[in-house]
Length: 254
Image (cartoon, rainbow, N blue to C red; front, side, top):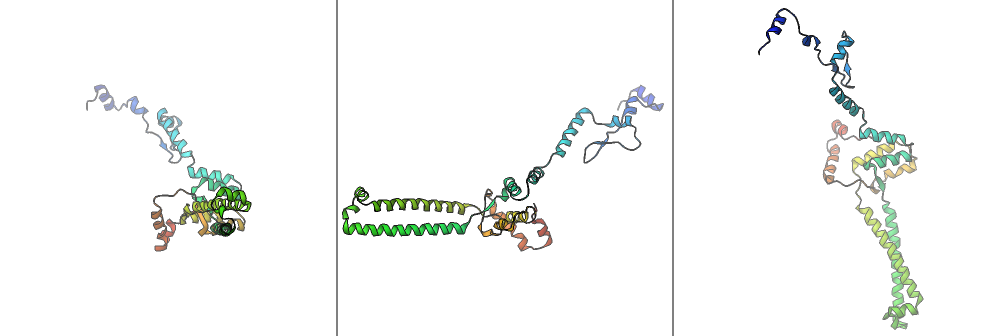
């Protein structure tokens, strides 16, 4: 490397250039706050010369802003904690976390209503069959003409109207039951997460909280996933390998 003769002469005489005198290594940054750290024994003037330039400082200010932002989970927890304890807080956590969208399908009540409506229709079916036999024996023309049967027999007309109403109600109940049957059952991990939250994080009276104990009657509105089979296999690992490591990995907290 070529060195200027004047610079070489100055170095040989022990005279440092102004550029070397003014140079200071960049200031160290605090790993948490990203603010410059002033070393012990350094004057304020020397410290200011080590500070980042304007471009670097703007970048550091942006990074500091990112570090101060709350994560989505922290922000959600903050919103939930603002709600009063009890149903307001439980409703908020259900609204914020899809794995908490867990409700009862009331399968027993569905079955009771369907069985009751089914038997109602059976009785109406029997009444209609009996009326058809009466018409056949006494008024055979009524079985051949709908218009005549309706015009001559108010009982017949009213019976068909009642059958129609009950049939619509029965079809509606069947549709509801089919809709409920198509909902997914909650995954074991989601169920435990909701149960732990109800047990330790929110206060409801025992009667109101009892719904979570009806595990076989629960459905979830959480969108189904393609890897449900894989999830099921993974959830079985703690039972297959009941050691401390697996219990720690698969423990659920809210």
